[in-house]
Image (tube, rainbow, N blue to C red; front, side, top):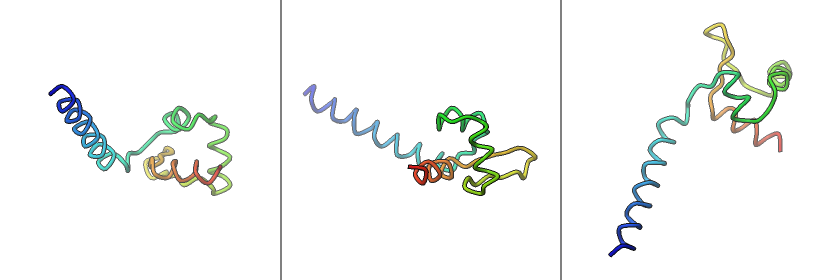
Length: 78
């Protein structure tokens, strides 16, 4: 009986994780968020913005990045 309950808990957590990812997959990140998320310096981010290798939105007057853009950039850096 315990094994079945553990299975249901794991299944529920996986479902919750998928829902969170689908809802926040297009989450906007600040430069500081990207520094922490990607483990890179602000200088590195600035260099890649200038080179055009890192997509950025400046519509609000500050650099904002979609998480999916950062994931794609990190994948291309490898």
